[in-house]
Length: 483
Image 1 (cartoon, rainbow, N blue to C red):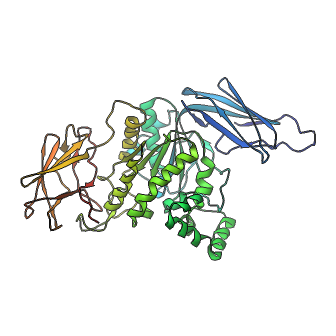
Image 2: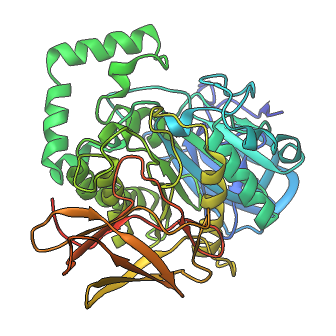
Image 3: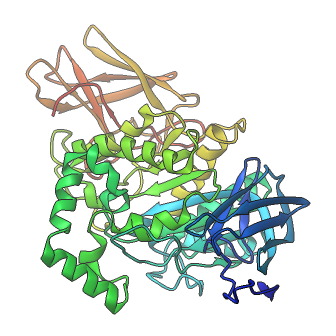
């Protein structure tokens, strides 16, 4: 357990107030292979020393009492060792590991649990039985978690009420991701889970982004009206609880209370499962998400901070047509983040539940996210994603699709590929028949003698069966610029 030792009171008799940031504690995991910031508060001018794994660094608190030091890059270690932080008082954190750290954030599908882990009691609805089968093995592994409790604030908060735990994360996605990643990397893995159901991306955005996004500025102006300020303050005075739906839908408040305290804790990247709250405005999200990712990297001071988004899975009993309003447009908006380097998207187009916005099939998401991280972040010789549109061509009456990641292209049920639509010059979409030829798909459709455009898996809950040799599903796409 953490030990605090009285060293001395200052000559003026002022009580020492050394306070490391809330992200530091017993059982924490420090990120390997990169500098590790350590920060907190103390008396102005106080000298702070941090000792860990044979390294000692020092910092001096500034006029406001803020101090920051930086441990050098550390090698992975599953051996629990102490970290000492000393000023006028001494604090010793026990059982500190070194490995891989990921921030897992978003809304309810990141927040919802799989079982009954005591450190994350909210929303334990039973979850995915495939994840539950991993629990016994997972508990034997060096997996740690830090959960940021739900909170809101009008100004950035230096600390949160969370703590490190040796229990498994109660978040289904964070748990499964940490398990599969640890199993593959064979080093300690930690997840910092900060999520709240129904939250929009704007809730997680810093205030200064109003200069880049007019809609965010308008949202903040509405929030700062007297009735809204009064309502937020009343909720905060009552004690923020998960059921405060109106509060968790407001802009900026979650960033201040649930994300700012995590910055700049050393981590490898973000796993982001969010979008249901923004799904009605895909064009706006397509502009907002890359700007927010860029802003996060500035906050952490790391341009290579990896950002992995979970695509929204199937939902909605729509017509199945590729020109109807559905989540297909939002998935296309999510893929816009791939224009930035060091980003990836976990394909879930074959998952989900048409009638339940909280589908239970989380295990494939966890497994695919870990596999994608292995390929794109850790440079393992694995294939982490399914077929991706490379190019297309029209030959006579056939529309031919070529894919990347298409080795072993086949269907999961042995039937012809499903989910393809073609349109000609009149813009009318017609279901297409599809055939696999090596690593390509050849399409044709009645009444479309001269096909000009194709859409694949472009509806709310698509029926799809096309995968590569690794069993990973093809990404949805459209070859046209139709609105």
